[in-house]
Amino acid sequence: MNISKFVVVGDRVLVKPKSLEEQTKSGIYLPPGVQEKEKIQSGYILKAGPGYPVAPPSAEEPWKESVSSTQYIPLQARVGDLAIFLQASSHEIDYDGERFLIVPNAAILLLVREDDDLEYYLK
Picture 1 (tube, rainbow, N blue to C red):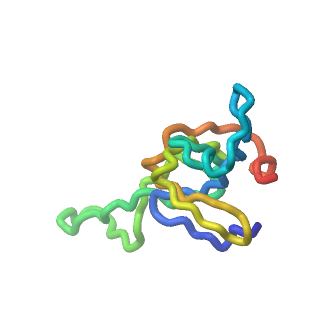
Picture 2 (cartoon, rainbow, N blue to C red; picture 1 turned 90 degrees about the horizontal axis):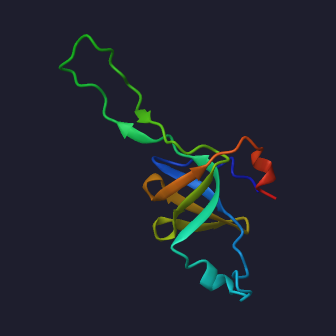
């Protein structure tokens, strides 16, 4: 899987969905279509956008430096975090036979951050 070509824009993150449980706690097996319709889903963040764009300083303040490039307020989400998010807000894409989700930052409910290597989760 080569995601190095992906450029995530704005306040979005690219997520590799976590494997869904095929069996309920009571032992009933669920088909993938039922599992994917859950309201809350989780997955590992592979790439994150730059954040929220901020308007450049106004020309009314001559003592400030003029900024020619766009500035951003960065996202809390980082590569390798486990994100728990609202499924309804995500957009599914398929690339090279792999399933990914593009999730806006506002749909992320919780981040679980560990210092483990991301490659462990991509297996």
